[in-house]
Image 1: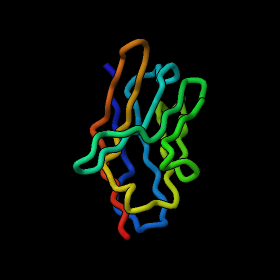
Image 2: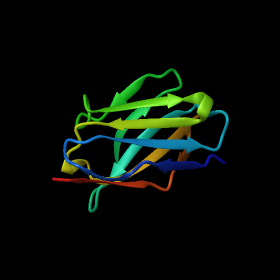
Image 3: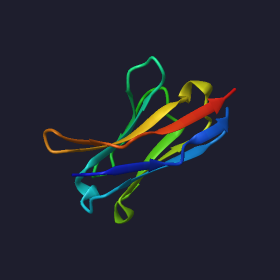
Length: 116
């Protein structure tokens, strides 16, 4: 059972930066595809960014050029660096680990609030 714990959320002004971290309980993080998703009030959960075990990245159009996902397998950690934050980035951000045909795990979420 993979457990994921996010940290780094909080309140930031528009235009500011924030880095989220997600630590996994397993030592085989290197074979997982890791991702960050977010959910704003009244909205469905949406993809923000993913990174494969081969470090191929994918981003939502809304965050391209502003957010960067990275991973440190030695630390069992995946990061989301968020720059040029906008009020519409306000949401609960969730870490996800995916493996095999149907393996899936989620963190508890961390709130990110961007004030205008």
